[in-house]
Structure formats: C-alpha cells, structure tokens
Image (cartoon, rainbow, N blue to C red; front, side, top):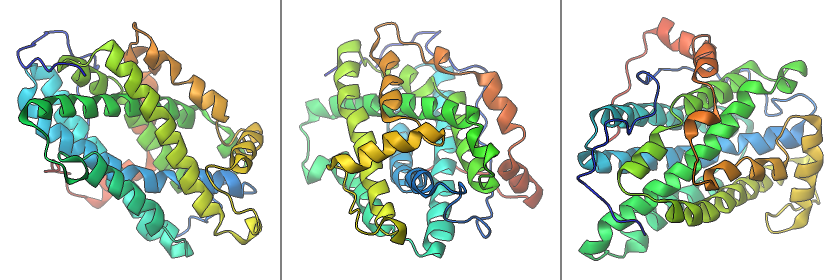
Length: 319
C-alpha cells in the first residue's frame, strides 16, 4: 500500500476549474412511471438500480472525506473536498428520495439491495473492517486504500455522467423528464468535480501500482453489484417471469449486451473499456470530460430551478 505523506503541499495539486457549487435540487416523483423509458423495461430497471447503489456509497464518501480533511495541506484542494462532500451528500439524498417516493410507490422491494450496500460501506469498508480494530500503523494505510477506491469509482461515475449528458436516445422515445434530470444533474456534477478524488488520493500518497490493483478490484465489484441489483428488480416484473435472472448466470449479461443495441444502455464491454484510462500512468481526469458542458446542463436543470423557487435550505456538511 502507499505510504501517507502528511507533509506534502503541492501548490498545483488541485486540477478543478474554479470553485465547485453545492446545488440544491427538488424532484417530484408523483408522475414518473416505473418503465420510465417507454417500451424499454429492461433498461428502465437496469438504470433504476443506480438509485439503490449510490446513497450508502456517497454518504460513505462524505464520512471518509470529513475524516481525511485534517491531512489535506493544500488550501484549494481542501476547499474542493469540502464542496465535493456537499455535492455528494445531495446526490445521496436525491437518489434516496427516488427509492422512497418512486420505487417503493410502485411496489418495488428495495430493502434487499440497499442492505447489501449498507453492509459493504458500514461494515466491510468501515474504519474497523468487519469489526476488527486495525493496528495503529495501518490506520492511515487503510484510509488511503479507501481513498483509492473512491478515486476509481469517481472515474466510473464521470464516464457514466458523460454518457447521460450525451445520450439523446432517451429523449427520442419520450423518457420521463424527472428521471432524466436526476441522471443528468448528477452526471454533470460528477463531470464537474471529476478531479477531486484523484487529486486527494495522490496528494495523500496514492501511487500508480496501488491505483492499478484498486481499479482491478473496484470496477468488477461495482459492475457486479449493479447487475445483481438489476436482476433483483427485473425478477419482480411479471414480464420476466421464469427468467430468474442472477448476476452469476450468463443470461442477464447476454440480455444486457443485446438491449444495449437500442442505445438506452452502454454495452457492458464499452463500459469496461471506458475504465482503461484510469490504468494509465499518465491518467488525467481533466481530460475525461468537459466542465463547460457540465455547467451548461447544470444551469438549466429543472430540479435545481425547482429547489431555488421553493427556497429550499442550503445543505450542510455531513458529519
């Protein structure tokens, strides 16, 4: 594992353009159909699983980043991290509202999937993994290890954010505007803050070799959890009665590849290929998206406008 250097203070460590904005959002789920992409139940369920993957993980990001703030010696990066925390907390709450007010309202059983994510982040990746107290000399190593996981995940969310911003196939078939806005608002903010996790990881000593093996762990785990959760959603749909989708069975992976041809989901091989830049010694998250494109969407997001018009209070840091 990488050794943490608490004395490192590079004036150019932050690669985030300008200052991040912790935007408030408000979503009205009352009219969103379960099949939010008309005629595409598989893609609708598959993307809906994102709502159950993200909240526990993003709140975990916030807790871990609050814990690491005292070690950040660069003023700009510290500001980036604090604003990143506020953005991620709002992401978690927005997707949590989709679970409570949208999926459950349509009779979807969500506890099985959310409990898996809670166990992953509250037990396995906790400060004391699986309840085991770490030796003092390993505490900072465990901290940097988890920061590397976040950096790998943030690369994935950035490329998926680009996909959401660029995909017009959803619009062509009349996809639900509220869920589209959730995906694009969240995706745009992932593009906007795409450098923060990597900057923080490298600032605290994360190196190339550790980044390589962490990505080899993280990418298959995230994709596997996504497929596993999506299978659980589809198995609740009478249209898939008898399919008995399982993440460890080829059927759902083959179906995913087939359904992606309609342009409503990324092909699984394409999704895996998009992760390859993170393996490069010359990886630069700045090159993975356009801040200008992200801001252009964020300035027109209906959910952000709805929050502003309602006078919704500002989000405070998650402790």
